[in-house]
Figure 1 (cartoon, rainbow, N blue to C red):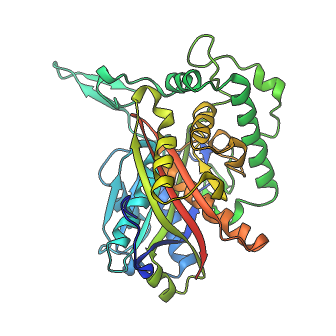
Figure 2: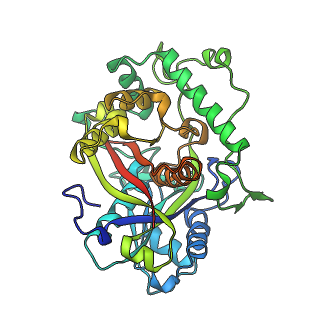
Length: 397
């Protein structure tokens, strides 16, 4: 919903009634032959099937993407998924925050009225992303590996360099980063062993076989091995390949509608979207953006960090994860209880949507185990010095 005053009519409150994702696999790995629409379309089809929705009843498909080739990927994927030509599509680009911002945008449109139904989320095929180039004065092409996010006078550091700057500025040690990253892998490995991810994953046809699971979590990691990794971005630094995420291909999407419409559709439970915030910060400390967005969001809704039951943070780097969580007064060990991007990988435009999918899955399990209607927080930092956070509450309908 909007970042302003909460919706006063409960029936118009935005809710998420279903959420699914693909396996998250290393870029140029098991899913390397699938384009972004080919990753996303199976998720959209599965959402329609599991929710019992009439494809023609979808009001719009709102999808986040960061490094695709343009051309309104959301519309293309909607048609690829078999939705009728009457269903439009909108593609959102807030880089790493795109998937979460797409869901936030859909939620705001629901709050505006009319009881619409949206498919919203994100997708990234880093493996098939087009090569990008600027055109020189002579007509030649100057290829580049990443976009420029802010004017040069503001500073536009590479992600790893910025993560190192965050570690230095906020006093996050190498030991803290390695410990956090190792815990992320161990939690993800345990979650896989217990089947925690199985209900949220849509299998895909990979290279000669069906891909049904994430390929990142490593059971073999040990503290001694973590300690042998050299600094990856700044000589003598603390940010290494082991306490940084890896690039991944993936898609994730949710069904967003109003509380009233969800009940008429026969949904039994949902995540109520209480609000979202996006904040800007110094681009040189871009990794801290999620912390400032979450701080504003919690303050606006009168929620203390102690009241949060579940926190999903996109772990692009351990340094920024620790810094952001400590900024809002959360012990980093209380976040990402089933692992995060350090173990699973970071699919840029889809990662924010993965956070929401993980929150719904965990909230359902927590309710079944304890009867707790969990209050959850999704947080993601964004290139260019931004961050987005969303506040969501599990409810039975």
